[in-house]
Length: 387
Image (cartoon, rainbow, N blue to C red):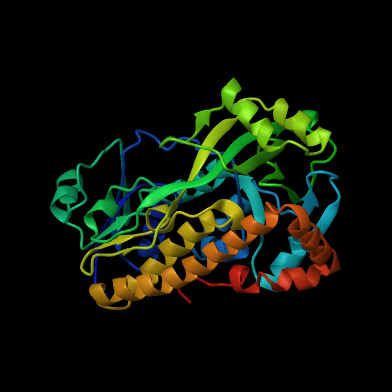
Protein backbone atom coordinates (compact mmCIF):
# COMPACT_ATOMS: atom_id res chain seq x y z
CA UNK A 1 0.00 0.00 0.00
CA UNK A 2 1.46 3.36 -1.05
CA UNK A 3 -0.56 5.55 1.35
CA UNK A 4 -2.11 5.23 4.79
CA UNK A 5 -4.12 8.46 5.14
CA UNK A 6 -6.06 10.85 2.88
CA UNK A 7 -7.74 14.22 3.25
CA UNK A 8 -10.97 14.51 1.27
CA UNK A 9 -12.33 17.98 0.53
CA UNK A 10 -16.12 17.77 0.22
CA UNK A 11 -18.65 15.47 1.87
CA UNK A 12 -21.01 14.99 -1.04
CA UNK A 13 -21.65 11.71 -2.84
CA UNK A 14 -18.14 11.61 -4.33
CA UNK A 15 -16.34 12.40 -1.08
CA UNK A 16 -18.31 10.02 1.13
CA UNK A 17 -17.98 7.19 -1.40
CA UNK A 18 -14.23 7.78 -1.65
CA UNK A 19 -13.87 7.70 2.15
CA UNK A 20 -15.72 4.38 2.44
CA UNK A 21 -13.81 2.90 -0.49
CA UNK A 22 -10.46 3.91 1.00
CA UNK A 23 -11.47 2.52 4.39
CA UNK A 24 -12.28 -0.79 2.75
CA UNK A 25 -8.62 -0.86 1.68
CA UNK A 26 -7.38 -0.01 5.18
CA UNK A 27 -6.72 3.67 4.38
CA UNK A 28 -7.98 6.25 6.87
CA UNK A 29 -9.35 9.64 5.85
CA UNK A 30 -10.42 13.04 7.13
CA UNK A 31 -13.44 14.38 5.23
CA UNK A 32 -13.62 18.19 5.35
CA UNK A 33 -16.93 19.90 4.57
CA UNK A 34 -17.64 23.63 4.77
CA UNK A 35 -21.36 23.16 5.47
CA UNK A 36 -22.24 22.96 9.19
CA UNK A 37 -24.48 20.00 8.45
CA UNK A 38 -25.23 17.77 5.49
CA UNK A 39 -28.64 18.99 4.46
CA UNK A 40 -31.07 17.93 1.80
CA UNK A 41 -29.80 19.19 -1.56
CA UNK A 42 -31.71 18.56 -4.75
CA UNK A 43 -34.58 16.13 -5.05
CA UNK A 44 -34.59 12.84 -6.90
CA UNK A 45 -31.90 10.90 -8.69
CA UNK A 46 -31.51 7.71 -10.67
CA UNK A 47 -28.98 5.03 -9.73
CA UNK A 48 -28.10 2.62 -12.53
CA UNK A 49 -26.42 -0.79 -12.06
CA UNK A 50 -22.89 0.56 -12.60
CA UNK A 51 -23.43 2.68 -9.46
CA UNK A 52 -25.40 0.18 -7.39
CA UNK A 53 -22.68 -2.42 -7.90
CA UNK A 54 -20.30 -0.09 -6.01
CA UNK A 55 -22.87 0.61 -3.28
CA UNK A 56 -23.36 -3.13 -2.88
CA UNK A 57 -19.61 -3.66 -2.56
CA UNK A 58 -19.49 -0.94 0.12
CA UNK A 59 -22.33 -2.53 2.08
CA UNK A 60 -24.80 0.38 1.80
CA UNK A 61 -27.13 -0.80 -0.95
CA UNK A 62 -29.38 -2.88 1.29
CA UNK A 63 -30.29 0.17 3.38
CA UNK A 64 -31.01 2.23 0.27
CA UNK A 65 -33.22 -0.50 -1.19
CA UNK A 66 -35.52 -0.20 1.84
CA UNK A 67 -36.52 3.28 0.70
CA UNK A 68 -36.26 3.45 -3.07
CA UNK A 69 -38.37 2.26 -5.99
CA UNK A 70 -37.16 0.07 -8.85
CA UNK A 71 -38.89 1.36 -12.00
CA UNK A 72 -40.34 -1.28 -14.27
CA UNK A 73 -39.19 0.61 -17.35
CA UNK A 74 -37.55 3.74 -18.71
CA UNK A 75 -39.73 5.29 -21.41
CA UNK A 76 -39.30 7.97 -24.04
CA UNK A 77 -42.54 9.74 -24.96
CA UNK A 78 -43.69 12.65 -27.08
CA UNK A 79 -44.14 15.96 -25.29
CA UNK A 80 -46.82 16.91 -27.79
CA UNK A 81 -48.98 13.79 -27.91
CA UNK A 82 -47.84 11.90 -24.76
CA UNK A 83 -47.47 8.83 -27.01
CA UNK A 84 -44.74 6.34 -26.04
CA UNK A 85 -41.87 6.35 -28.54
CA UNK A 86 -39.59 3.70 -27.02
CA UNK A 87 -39.16 1.71 -23.83
CA UNK A 88 -36.24 0.03 -22.06
CA UNK A 89 -37.22 -2.55 -19.43
CA UNK A 90 -35.79 -2.16 -15.93
CA UNK A 91 -36.93 -3.80 -12.67
CA UNK A 92 -36.13 -7.51 -12.62
CA UNK A 93 -34.79 -7.21 -16.17
CA UNK A 94 -32.07 -4.80 -15.00
CA UNK A 95 -30.99 -7.17 -12.22
CA UNK A 96 -30.76 -10.06 -14.64
CA UNK A 97 -29.07 -8.29 -17.55
CA UNK A 98 -26.69 -5.97 -15.69
CA UNK A 99 -26.26 -7.86 -12.42
CA UNK A 100 -27.50 -5.11 -10.12
CA UNK A 101 -30.72 -3.09 -9.67
CA UNK A 102 -31.78 0.23 -11.18
CA UNK A 103 -33.46 2.50 -8.65
CA UNK A 104 -34.98 5.95 -8.24
CA UNK A 105 -34.81 7.72 -4.90
CA UNK A 106 -34.53 10.99 -3.09
CA UNK A 107 -30.96 12.30 -3.04
CA UNK A 108 -31.06 12.54 0.75
CA UNK A 109 -31.68 8.78 0.98
CA UNK A 110 -28.36 8.08 -0.72
CA UNK A 111 -26.51 10.78 1.19
CA UNK A 112 -27.84 9.62 4.56
CA UNK A 113 -26.91 5.99 3.85
CA UNK A 114 -23.37 7.01 2.91
CA UNK A 115 -23.13 9.36 5.89
CA UNK A 116 -24.28 6.72 8.36
CA UNK A 117 -21.71 4.28 6.97
CA UNK A 118 -18.94 6.90 7.24
CA UNK A 119 -19.87 7.78 10.83
CA UNK A 120 -19.83 4.08 11.69
CA UNK A 121 -16.41 3.52 10.12
CA UNK A 122 -13.45 4.00 12.54
CA UNK A 123 -11.10 4.86 9.67
CA UNK A 124 -13.25 7.84 8.60
CA UNK A 125 -13.46 11.17 10.43
CA UNK A 126 -15.88 13.87 9.29
CA UNK A 127 -15.19 17.58 9.91
CA UNK A 128 -18.27 19.75 9.33
CA UNK A 129 -18.34 23.53 9.18
CA UNK A 130 -14.66 23.75 8.22
CA UNK A 131 -13.90 26.02 5.29
CA UNK A 132 -10.37 25.60 3.92
CA UNK A 133 -8.37 28.53 2.57
CA UNK A 134 -6.26 26.17 0.46
CA UNK A 135 -5.89 22.47 -0.14
CA UNK A 136 -2.17 22.06 0.30
CA UNK A 137 -1.10 19.21 2.55
CA UNK A 138 0.11 21.58 5.28
CA UNK A 139 -3.10 23.62 5.20
CA UNK A 140 -5.25 20.53 5.54
CA UNK A 141 -3.05 19.14 8.28
CA UNK A 142 -3.69 22.36 10.22
CA UNK A 143 -7.45 21.73 9.97
CA UNK A 144 -7.42 18.02 10.76
CA UNK A 145 -4.32 17.65 12.91
CA UNK A 146 -2.92 14.95 10.66
CA UNK A 147 -0.77 15.22 7.56
CA UNK A 148 -2.33 13.35 4.61
CA UNK A 149 -0.47 11.34 1.99
CA UNK A 150 -3.19 12.12 -0.54
CA UNK A 151 -5.58 15.04 -1.08
CA UNK A 152 -8.86 14.23 -2.85
CA UNK A 153 -10.78 17.16 -4.33
CA UNK A 154 -14.43 16.10 -4.16
CA UNK A 155 -15.76 19.63 -3.81
CA UNK A 156 -18.01 19.89 -6.82
CA UNK A 157 -18.42 22.26 -9.75
CA UNK A 158 -16.90 25.27 -7.98
CA UNK A 159 -13.94 23.26 -6.71
CA UNK A 160 -11.21 24.88 -4.63
CA UNK A 161 -9.02 21.82 -5.04
CA UNK A 162 -9.04 22.29 -8.81
CA UNK A 163 -7.19 25.58 -8.39
CA UNK A 164 -3.99 23.90 -7.18
CA UNK A 165 -3.69 21.52 -10.13
CA UNK A 166 -1.93 23.05 -13.15
CA UNK A 167 -3.99 22.98 -16.38
CA UNK A 168 -7.03 21.62 -14.55
CA UNK A 169 -10.52 21.80 -16.12
CA UNK A 170 -12.51 25.03 -16.13
CA UNK A 171 -16.30 25.22 -15.91
CA UNK A 172 -18.73 27.14 -18.08
CA UNK A 173 -22.47 27.50 -18.44
CA UNK A 174 -23.81 24.80 -20.76
CA UNK A 175 -26.68 26.78 -22.25
CA UNK A 176 -29.17 24.57 -20.39
CA UNK A 177 -31.37 25.22 -17.37
CA UNK A 178 -33.02 22.61 -15.16
CA UNK A 179 -36.22 23.38 -13.30
CA UNK A 180 -36.60 20.87 -10.47
CA UNK A 181 -39.82 20.39 -8.54
CA UNK A 182 -42.00 17.72 -6.97
CA UNK A 183 -45.69 16.84 -7.19
CA UNK A 184 -47.71 15.18 -4.45
CA UNK A 185 -48.95 11.74 -5.35
CA UNK A 186 -52.58 12.69 -4.71
CA UNK A 187 -52.33 15.68 -7.08
CA UNK A 188 -50.37 13.95 -9.86
CA UNK A 189 -51.86 13.97 -13.36
CA UNK A 190 -52.61 10.66 -15.04
CA UNK A 191 -49.80 10.91 -17.61
CA UNK A 192 -47.13 10.53 -14.91
CA UNK A 193 -46.05 6.89 -14.61
CA UNK A 194 -46.73 5.24 -11.25
CA UNK A 195 -43.97 2.67 -11.71
CA UNK A 196 -41.44 3.97 -14.24
CA UNK A 197 -39.15 6.72 -15.45
CA UNK A 198 -40.51 8.77 -18.36
CA UNK A 199 -38.68 11.32 -20.52
CA UNK A 200 -41.11 13.47 -22.50
CA UNK A 201 -39.27 14.93 -25.49
CA UNK A 202 -39.79 18.18 -27.36
CA UNK A 203 -38.13 20.92 -29.36
CA UNK A 204 -35.14 22.26 -27.38
CA UNK A 205 -36.51 20.85 -24.12
CA UNK A 206 -37.52 17.70 -22.28
CA UNK A 207 -39.21 16.65 -19.03
CA UNK A 208 -38.08 13.76 -16.81
CA UNK A 209 -40.48 12.32 -14.25
CA UNK A 210 -40.54 9.37 -11.87
CA UNK A 211 -42.18 8.44 -8.56
CA UNK A 212 -40.40 8.77 -5.22
CA UNK A 213 -41.38 6.12 -2.71
CA UNK A 214 -39.97 8.16 0.21
CA UNK A 215 -42.35 11.08 -0.34
CA UNK A 216 -45.30 9.37 -2.02
CA UNK A 217 -44.89 11.90 -4.78
CA UNK A 218 -43.06 12.54 -8.04
CA UNK A 219 -39.74 14.07 -8.95
CA UNK A 220 -39.78 16.21 -12.08
CA UNK A 221 -36.94 17.89 -13.93
CA UNK A 222 -37.69 20.14 -16.89
CA UNK A 223 -34.59 20.94 -18.94
CA UNK A 224 -34.53 23.58 -21.65
CA UNK A 225 -31.76 24.98 -23.81
CA UNK A 226 -31.02 28.48 -25.08
CA UNK A 227 -31.45 30.36 -21.80
CA UNK A 228 -29.08 32.65 -19.88
CA UNK A 229 -27.72 32.26 -16.36
CA UNK A 230 -25.28 33.71 -13.89
CA UNK A 231 -23.08 31.76 -11.51
CA UNK A 232 -25.80 30.56 -9.15
CA UNK A 233 -27.70 27.33 -8.65
CA UNK A 234 -30.73 26.09 -6.73
CA UNK A 235 -32.45 29.49 -7.06
CA UNK A 236 -36.14 29.69 -6.21
CA UNK A 237 -37.98 30.17 -9.50
CA UNK A 238 -39.74 33.54 -9.41
CA UNK A 239 -42.58 34.64 -11.73
CA UNK A 240 -40.19 35.78 -14.46
CA UNK A 241 -38.28 32.50 -14.46
CA UNK A 242 -41.51 30.46 -14.44
CA UNK A 243 -42.69 32.45 -17.47
CA UNK A 244 -39.38 31.66 -19.17
CA UNK A 245 -39.94 27.99 -18.43
CA UNK A 246 -43.38 27.95 -20.01
CA UNK A 247 -42.06 29.74 -23.07
CA UNK A 248 -39.52 26.94 -23.58
CA UNK A 249 -42.38 24.42 -23.59
CA UNK A 250 -44.56 26.21 -26.12
CA UNK A 251 -46.45 23.71 -28.30
CA UNK A 252 -46.31 20.92 -25.71
CA UNK A 253 -49.37 18.94 -24.62
CA UNK A 254 -51.77 21.02 -22.53
CA UNK A 255 -51.53 18.57 -19.62
CA UNK A 256 -47.76 19.09 -19.37
CA UNK A 257 -48.01 22.87 -19.70
CA UNK A 258 -50.66 22.94 -16.95
CA UNK A 259 -48.40 20.88 -14.72
CA UNK A 260 -45.45 23.23 -15.32
CA UNK A 261 -47.60 26.32 -14.77
CA UNK A 262 -48.75 24.97 -11.42
CA UNK A 263 -45.32 23.88 -10.20
CA UNK A 264 -44.81 24.84 -6.56
CA UNK A 265 -41.45 25.62 -4.97
CA UNK A 266 -39.60 24.97 -8.22
CA UNK A 267 -35.85 25.50 -8.21
CA UNK A 268 -33.97 27.03 -11.12
CA UNK A 269 -30.63 25.26 -11.73
CA UNK A 270 -28.23 26.57 -14.39
CA UNK A 271 -26.23 23.58 -15.62
CA UNK A 272 -22.45 23.85 -15.87
CA UNK A 273 -19.93 21.58 -17.51
CA UNK A 274 -16.19 21.06 -17.19
CA UNK A 275 -13.66 21.39 -19.99
CA UNK A 276 -10.75 19.08 -20.68
CA UNK A 277 -7.83 19.37 -18.25
CA UNK A 278 -5.64 17.58 -15.76
CA UNK A 279 -7.25 15.80 -12.81
CA UNK A 280 -4.11 15.28 -10.73
CA UNK A 281 -0.79 16.98 -10.04
CA UNK A 282 1.46 13.95 -10.46
CA UNK A 283 2.28 13.78 -6.74
CA UNK A 284 -0.42 13.92 -4.10
CA UNK A 285 -3.64 15.63 -5.23
CA UNK A 286 -6.50 14.35 -7.41
CA UNK A 287 -9.98 15.47 -8.48
CA UNK A 288 -13.08 13.28 -8.56
CA UNK A 289 -16.77 13.77 -9.34
CA UNK A 290 -18.00 17.12 -10.62
CA UNK A 291 -14.71 18.78 -9.64
CA UNK A 292 -13.09 16.74 -12.42
CA UNK A 293 -15.80 16.22 -15.03
CA UNK A 294 -19.05 18.07 -14.39
CA UNK A 295 -21.35 17.08 -17.25
CA UNK A 296 -24.91 17.49 -18.42
CA UNK A 297 -27.56 15.17 -16.90
CA UNK A 298 -28.72 13.84 -20.27
CA UNK A 299 -27.47 10.33 -19.47
CA UNK A 300 -28.58 10.44 -15.79
CA UNK A 301 -25.02 9.57 -14.71
CA UNK A 302 -23.91 12.43 -12.46
CA UNK A 303 -24.18 10.54 -9.17
CA UNK A 304 -23.05 7.29 -10.79
CA UNK A 305 -19.82 8.83 -12.12
CA UNK A 306 -19.01 10.27 -8.68
CA UNK A 307 -19.60 6.86 -7.10
CA UNK A 308 -17.47 5.10 -9.70
CA UNK A 309 -14.68 7.65 -9.23
CA UNK A 310 -14.45 7.20 -5.47
CA UNK A 311 -14.36 3.43 -5.70
CA UNK A 312 -11.88 3.29 -8.59
CA UNK A 313 -9.53 5.75 -6.87
CA UNK A 314 -9.28 3.51 -3.82
CA UNK A 315 -8.52 0.50 -6.00
CA UNK A 316 -5.63 2.30 -7.67
CA UNK A 317 -3.97 4.03 -4.70
CA UNK A 318 -4.08 0.83 -2.65
CA UNK A 319 -2.25 -1.23 -5.26
CA UNK A 320 0.49 0.98 -6.78
CA UNK A 321 2.91 3.79 -5.86
CA UNK A 322 0.92 7.00 -5.49
CA UNK A 323 2.18 8.94 -8.53
CA UNK A 324 1.66 5.90 -10.74
CA UNK A 325 -1.75 5.21 -9.22
CA UNK A 326 -2.97 8.77 -9.84
CA UNK A 327 -1.79 8.74 -13.45
CA UNK A 328 -3.48 5.40 -14.12
CA UNK A 329 -6.67 6.52 -12.39
CA UNK A 330 -6.77 9.71 -14.46
CA UNK A 331 -6.27 7.88 -17.75
CA UNK A 332 -8.87 5.23 -16.98
CA UNK A 333 -11.52 7.57 -15.64
CA UNK A 334 -11.04 10.22 -18.34
CA UNK A 335 -11.75 7.59 -20.96
CA UNK A 336 -14.86 6.48 -19.12
CA UNK A 337 -16.14 10.01 -18.44
CA UNK A 338 -15.59 11.05 -22.06
CA UNK A 339 -17.67 8.13 -23.29
CA UNK A 340 -20.47 8.93 -20.85
CA UNK A 341 -20.36 12.61 -21.83
CA UNK A 342 -20.57 11.66 -25.51
CA UNK A 343 -23.66 9.58 -24.74
CA UNK A 344 -25.18 12.54 -22.94
CA UNK A 345 -24.40 14.84 -25.86
CA UNK A 346 -26.09 12.39 -28.22
CA UNK A 347 -29.15 12.21 -25.95
CA UNK A 348 -29.33 16.00 -25.86
CA UNK A 349 -29.36 16.12 -29.66
CA UNK A 350 -31.98 13.36 -29.87
CA UNK A 351 -34.21 14.59 -27.03
CA UNK A 352 -34.35 18.19 -28.30
CA UNK A 353 -34.63 17.40 -32.02
CA UNK A 354 -36.88 19.49 -34.24
CA UNK A 355 -38.49 19.17 -37.68
CA UNK A 356 -37.34 16.33 -39.98
CA UNK A 357 -34.76 15.15 -37.42
CA UNK A 358 -37.52 14.68 -34.83
CA UNK A 359 -39.64 12.75 -37.31
CA UNK A 360 -36.71 10.49 -38.20
CA UNK A 361 -35.91 9.99 -34.51
CA UNK A 362 -39.46 8.91 -33.72
CA UNK A 363 -39.50 6.48 -36.64
CA UNK A 364 -36.18 4.87 -35.68
CA UNK A 365 -37.23 4.51 -32.04
CA UNK A 366 -40.54 2.94 -33.01
CA UNK A 367 -38.71 0.20 -34.93
CA UNK A 368 -36.37 -0.78 -32.07
CA UNK A 369 -37.58 -3.59 -29.77
CA UNK A 370 -37.00 -3.08 -26.01
CA UNK A 371 -34.21 -5.67 -25.74
CA UNK A 372 -32.36 -4.08 -28.64
CA UNK A 373 -32.54 -0.69 -26.92
CA UNK A 374 -31.34 -2.27 -23.66
CA UNK A 375 -28.26 -3.66 -25.41
CA UNK A 376 -27.18 -0.07 -26.15
CA UNK A 377 -26.64 0.37 -22.40
CA UNK A 378 -24.54 -2.73 -21.73
CA UNK A 379 -21.27 -0.73 -21.82
CA UNK A 380 -22.72 1.84 -19.39
CA UNK A 381 -24.76 -0.17 -16.90
CA UNK A 382 -22.60 -3.29 -17.05
CA UNK A 383 -19.39 -1.41 -16.20
CA UNK A 384 -17.66 -2.30 -12.92
CA UNK A 385 -15.47 0.48 -11.53
CA UNK A 386 -11.98 -0.58 -10.52
CA UNK A 387 -12.52 -3.98 -12.07
